[in-house]
Length: 269
Image (cartoon, rainbow, N blue to C red):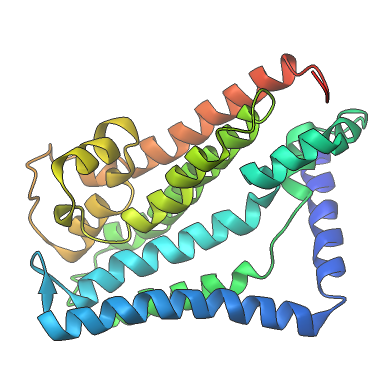
């Protein structure tokens, strides 16, 4: 394990040095990433300023949801870029993944360390800014339990979406047709849970509750932090299911990944 972690650290170090060779390019890439976040949330903020709330959720409360997802998804997108389904599928088609298999190094660590999107720091920074502002504007009764649970929720979100990336990458061993479907679950899913689940139709809410249980990663923890009542009358443990859903998804994804590795037949098959 120590050897694998050391290899992973070295791979990340190479990625950081290579991307920082062109600092102007890195700066503008990070700026473009942050402007996307600013534009998206700015448009929502303008609407909420006009109508004051959306299904009873005020702008600071929506900002809490949005900022939490942005900083978590940004971290995941940076750390799990090696498994990003479109890019990983390209590696499989081009045969570059086969080169990784020839090295006597843990294959999961190699894929994780093969790509580190530092430009996501722009998205992460603005996500943190929105989230910190939301915490300041909301009258949150902070307790030791809430302070301790917050990083757990963030880590659970990272693990959940990272698991979806791993699943999407693994499916690329057999087909590339599923890439768009996985993008709907990852990027589309992060967009969906950035807003109160009460605004969506029943079928979509049920999908993100029973099929892809992302509702327990952001919406229910937000109810706990903000002190809001549960509109769907779930059991009292619902706000605390985030680690089970997030890390459970990543664990299942890694099991599927190892299954895919065992049955991988190389490029062209």
